[in-house]
Length: 128
Image (cartoon, rainbow, N blue to C red; front, side, top):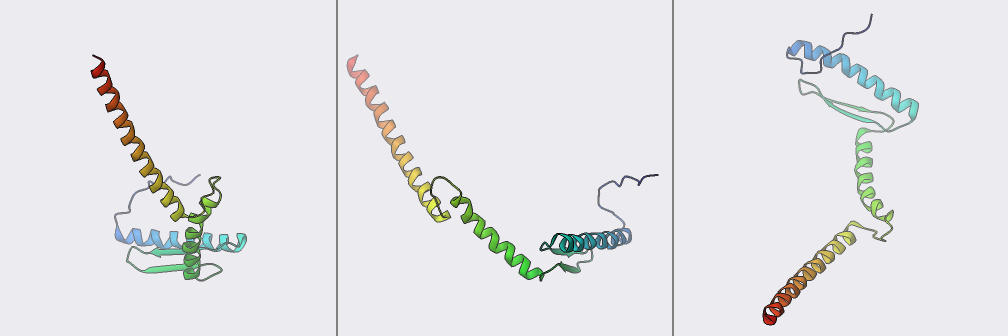
């Protein structure tokens, strides 16, 4: 006989919710530990219990070090995205500068186009 399919919704009874949290927390921590050990990965779990208690699991490194590593990595990836680009853009600030330059050039082209259309209309009126 298989397990009963659990309907995924908030458990209304506070006591049942606390028991479910405690059991699932154990399973989550076990899986995090297994993943950290077997695959040699950095893991940091930050959990707030229903009662507001803070629980932190850190695998091979301190959670603070793992979080700092993640933040540093996300900043580096912003720059790395441009290095992979074939356009030669190597930084976010360079891309922003080029974007402003292109917008200004597009604005000037639009204004010039408007004047040309206006001049054509004036010439047509003169022909009539």
